[in-house]
Every structure is written in structure tokens, then in C-alpha cells.
Length: 347
Image 1: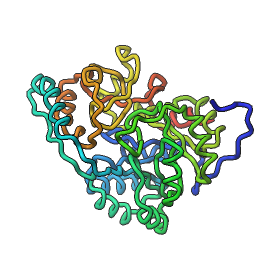
Image 2 (image 1 turned 135 degrees about the vertical axis):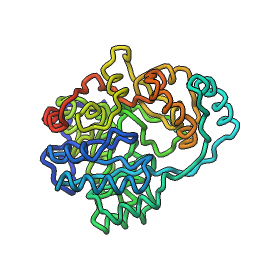
Image 3 (image 1 turned 180 degrees about the vertical axis):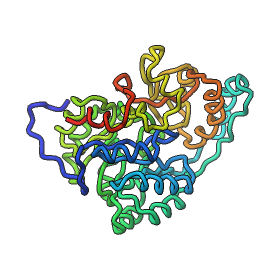
């Protein structure tokens, strides 16, 4: 564990100025909206749009809309989806396992298809519209991509979960590292989807990465109180990233079902699962997670397989079958304007 009495180096500053050292995490699937990104930025932090699982046109429209809502900095996150060689027998076995869930709702299990989330088209959107910051999750782009965006004046950031990943991202040219700890809600950013995500506590992980790179660090995962923000900043991070803390914000696109679940005493803990998408992700523990203890790591094939089931569960308001992403600090989430939440989190 980190020695609280140790003298830590001053954090390497971010290449842009913020009035408050708070980053609004990109949350794919609806919670991240132009209104939320603009509100976080106008509150003195940096708001992010989530480009994952959107079409290039939807992403372009959201960037344009956000520009009309704030004159401040905005960030965009993209998924880096690596090619994989999925085991067809395992996918068929999972299809059969999911069939009773599909029958319950009268839908079909989705086809286990692979795609790169329109990678090249979304990079074109980034080049054309030039958000101030672009971050990458699930893997590190090639060096030529990062260097090109850096040359265009777009600050590049890569989400990492280990010192090895941090070295890779720094060597390829990432200007900023986003350090994700094990308590984070939603998908873990581990580069290798087959690997078990690390469990090193966020303060220790930040300290270890801080000692191996000269890049500025943004740290996130389970941060939900002002005291936690202060503690992470004290480890050498230049800023913290919060997501779950913003899920109940007025400007968030969080669904009514997700909002109610975050406040429902029926849900007593979070759990990491691969059952919904094939990638490890933390959410409110429910029946679907417990029924489908899978080690399959075929992403996005499993994401596409469960998509019709998740849509049907949402239509039936079946919270026990939904992917209710949340970090370990979800009980501290509160409703209200994002500006108030950011102010409350600021030391």
C-alpha cells in the first residue's frame, strides 16, 4: 500500500488549464450527453462525449451540439476494438444459455458479429471537428495515429490499467494517461480482453505509474467524495475522472430504469461481469450477472448477442436483466445540476 507519510512528487500538469481538477468520464450507452459535457466544462472541469457504440454521424452531431452549449474545452472518447479469434463453439454454447432469457421476452439472441466500431470513420470525425481532447479506451492506437492527432493540436489520452499499459501508451505518443482503478463502473480498459483486470488499489496504481512515466495523469475509479478526490490528487494525479458520481445529474442521459436502480435498496453491491459484452465491466449485481458466470472474452460479439435481450429487459423495466453500470461508490451519487456535483467534489 502507498505510504501516507512518503513525500510524493508534484503532479505533472495537464497541457491545458482547468479551474477544477475534475474530468467527466465518457459513459457510452446514453449517460454522456452534450448537455452533461458542457455542464462539466462550464463548472470548471472537462466534459467528455462518449463515441463508443455511436455512428460517426451521431458523434459528429453531438460534438457540434456541444460546441453550441459551451465555449470551453470538450473531450471525446473512442473505443479501440482489436480483432479477435472468437471460439465459435463457446459462442454457440452461450447462445443456447441465453435462449431462455430471449424466450422470456419473445426476442431472438443477437448474431455474434465483430466490428471495429467504425474506427476509421470516427477518426475522420475527430480530424474534421477537432475536439480539444480525444481519449482512447480498450487498447492503445498505433503511434502514427497519436502523433497525427498531436500534430493537429488535439490532446491525446489513453486509458490504462497497469504500468505496462502506461509504458506502451507513453512510448506511442499519448500526451496524457488516464489511470483506471479496479473500483470503476462500466468497462475496464484493460488492453487484453482475455486478461483478468488488475486489482491494485487506485492510489497504489497511480503512484506506480507516476514513477515510470513523465506523462500527466488523470485518475479514476470509485471516486465519489471530496475526500477521495483530495486523496487521489495527493498521489500525484493532475486531475480525477468521475463517472458514476454524475449518473444522476440532471443533464445526464441515464435511463429512468438505471436512475431508479442506483437508488433502489434492493441493489446492495457491484460486481464485475463479462456476461453482457464479453469485456469485464462493473455494474449493480443482479440476476443476469449471477445466472451467466462467463469467461468468454469475445468483444463485441457477445455485446451484439445480448443487445436484443437488454433492449427487451429495458422495455419491460426488468432491472434484474439490465446492464446497470456503476462504480463501487454509487451510493454517494446524487441528483441535481452537474455544476453542483462538480463543486461538491472539488477539494
